[in-house]
Amino acid sequence: MLSQGKTMEEARRNLLEVIEIQLEEMQQLGSLDEFLKETEFPLQQDVLISERDRVGFDKIFLPFSAVLEQTR
Image (cartoon, rainbow, N blue to C red; front, side, top):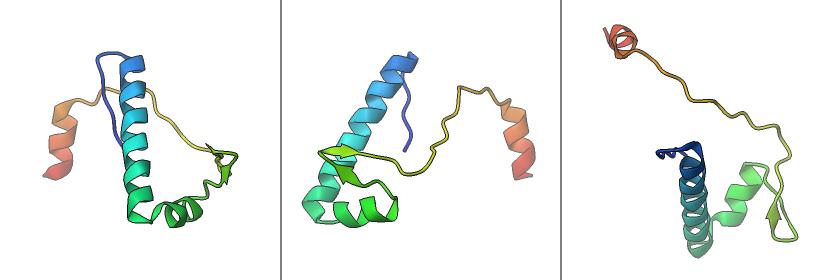
């Protein structure tokens, strides 16, 4: 999932909103339990607990010319 915002806090809030919407839709479709099992996020007392370490990334800047070079 991807999110953005004018500030880091806004990006985090936007990401949490996207995650909430995704989980609600999966619950309605009946696929949430399978998804949580596959991603190893057990639900414990209404809290998702990660059994793995997760990696996050800081903001980076990549020159557009570098992207173009990779596509040639």
